[in-house]
Image (tube, rainbow, N blue to C red; front, side):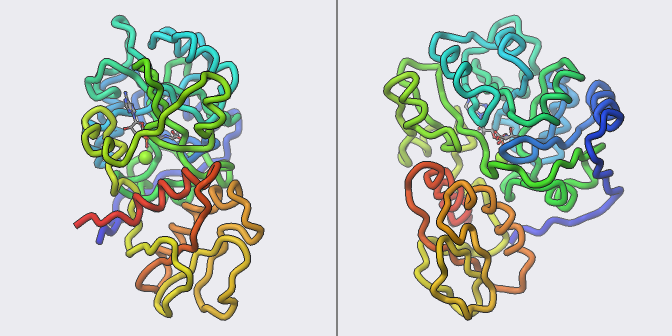
Length: 330
Ligand code: TXA
Ligand code: MG
């Protein structure tokens, strides 16, 4: 199983004061990597127009270069300079930006975004994060920022600055800390490059919320995920993997497992328990998901058992991440 080996100089975790933001902006302009908080998960940011800086993201994450990155901007006009916005994109942006929705759109031929960031695809993934620190930083730097989740490729996404420091601490120049990510799962990724609108990755903006604005929205099916790995490699089934086996829909824990509960737990005496939400609240469970999986990795247990999570609303995104985390990597 994967182990993160810590070596080299650890980066600084800083409170995002105006001075710290100015320092972060300068580092980004110099082509360095900065970890920034967003409402979904922490991002590993670099100047999206700088090929070397974007290459450094792939190197730091150990990410396959065919897996494209999300480009973050501070307003619609800034991003519209790089992608062809259509009516659907305009309406969705008006409703959900800033927020946890990433739109895949055709890239403008004259866009200065590094071709490496979009892995050579004719499309670009864009979003405006709903987090004051990220927005302040984006405004200060002015250039769009490429920012995948700030974790080594194939590892759990980070929802605290400490998670970033633990796994990428020696690879980032600065970590801007702003507590725990409020949403806790990555943005919804929506493919708008075709007539048929498809969700490539479920998130806090659900199919129902999207359909209420633009009508029919499809969710990419398991079978399609295998054939679409080239155009959306993030669909790889074992993308999010903790360092011990994960058992889904577990009605009760084994003695050597940590028990991730949802709603009232019936096994009050089990030694290792982490509650996703005592009250059975999906929003609370999403915010706790990666935190608890990180904690479970550190615990002296053989595996992780998770209670069933309802397949509605944010539960769809939670189950998507859990299924990927449980996928057999061989
Ligand atoms: O919430 C989020 O989206 C976080 C925060 C930091 O903003 N970022 C994030 O980035 O999750 P990352 O790189 O871990 O996930 C990006 C996803 C991947 O599944 C990738 O394959 C997909 O978006 N993607 C990016 N560009 C694409 C494109 N042009 N076509 C299809 N899929 C694309
Ligand atoms: Mg990721």
